[in-house]
Length: 216
Ligand SMILES: [Cu+2]
Image (cartoon, rainbow, N blue to C red; front, side):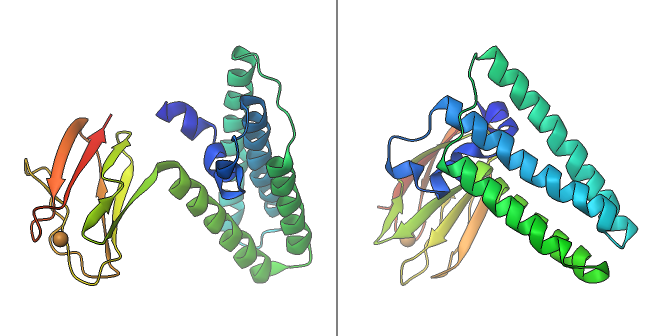
């Protein structure tokens, strides 16, 4: 379902960030409203930047944002219609809208290079957060264990091992597909899973530490 989750622009992640994960989670109708709103926030900021940005590069970037996110929203709307779901406003979509409106109001106070910088900073933060939420998975290494011990990801996703222990560990595929080498305490190691397979791995320093990464 990678295509749909990417098309839907991290809606689940946005929903999780705002506390849905602890409750029953948003319905499809609520996710649809969150996705459309998340895209609209980017489109609104982009349109403002098209008229107010000082540099040509920033204007071009704003144009790209408007085009991209209008395309995503069109695809999302078509998908929603196909699934016969009516978008339903909810606290998450409302808070995204409020944040977007506040950002636009703040940007309108700025001019020239200050506007450009504030707009680009905001866009980068927003997109990094959304992309992280879509394709990044974390395995925490602590107390001589990989947590979660079993992880299943989509092809192309990023898996990050974060060492929270007091000594070094590794994430070493027993078949040789990947080897982090030593990950120092508080350091992390990232692997982009490109080949669908089920990978058993161990810590080569403490071979009782085992885990499985499944790439679909
Ligand atoms: Cu270890």
